[in-house]
Length: 144
Image (cartoon, rainbow, N blue to C red; front, side, top):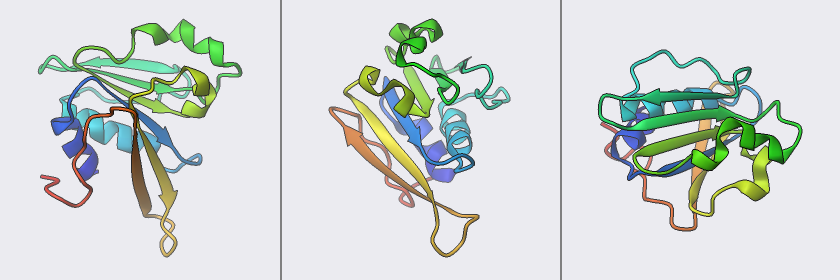
């Protein structure tokens, strides 16, 4: 969570995060941490049933949190305002990006959350930049 908050505070915008992992892996928990770091103060329910939430911060950053789990076809993302995502001072947090595979932007972070092999309550977080994604703080380094 500290790393997510550091990312939200310091990452260059616009930035897009594909959050990948099994059900219950902690994708929404990480999304909330990034959003808090970016300045979101409002409660952040899971977007599983609403599909998309938008948060505007006092700092001028807009955070989009989407969950595509319930979509059955890629082209359904257009109904969510897909074409307007990820410009200006925005952070896009996308759960279940596999549902929009061919429509994902080329410049983004793919973040994977997996159970820790020795403790199922812990998560291992790994990230890989795609294209020209902006740098993010390394986990465990200067998370404060």
